[in-house]
Length: 315
Image (cartoon, rainbow, N blue to C red; front, side, top):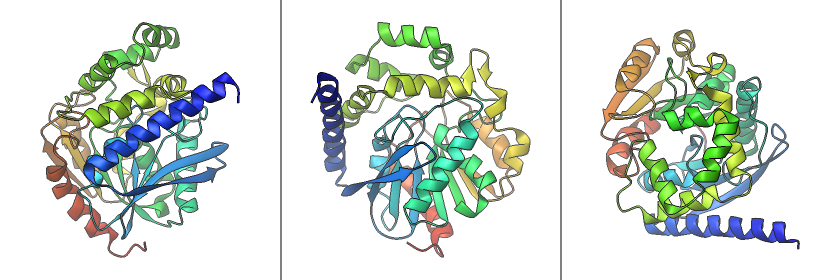
């Protein structure tokens, strides 16, 4: 084995070990499924736990899929499927461009659900994952029964991203920022604060963030994803969720919004809830990852919604 392969294998092992420590802390028994996905020319990594009706969980661009684990521990009675996005975990990388993003995202989620044996599912998503899920709901409505969206969906109603991410959308600046501020415990803390969170007493999750950022290809995939969605001035109009797009989503949508979400204020959520044909909004304390420090509160909102729309969906 050459030195690069050895380094890559060590990074993957470090990531898996950190993920297992987080799962152990919360008492979540999970298995990892790898499914071939022609849409990205590789495989998708899916963390699966629990039993019951299927729920697809789509994380945003940046955090590890393990950010769902505190909430997974509280959501009993469901078969939870948490998928890594391409290049941003153990899923194979792909090309993120503004021109191909929607087509690739829809094809990816459509094929992953098919390979998992899921026909129609309730989705729980966050940030960029919510953007992808809403596109799926619009373009493949038979796949999506309902959506619980946690935090501000990426690019919804002219929202954008904090300044550091908009700067990173310029490739030369983004690569410079990565060189001067490489993965480290302090850098992880800054990333978490940028999302409006502190994640009290979350050493295992912080370690997983760091291990994720040290995976081969992660930094390139993150810069490509950011570049495909935002620019210095804000969201790229080609991928923005407009008023007409929101109004066209026929599935029931639950929006849960952090009071201090730096990606978009609760007023954006109120506007979206008014536009959605079947929408509801809940504003809770926190920023862009509010469920981590208060999973019981959030599960109390998400659980009944999932039950309501999962009743007739086969496991």
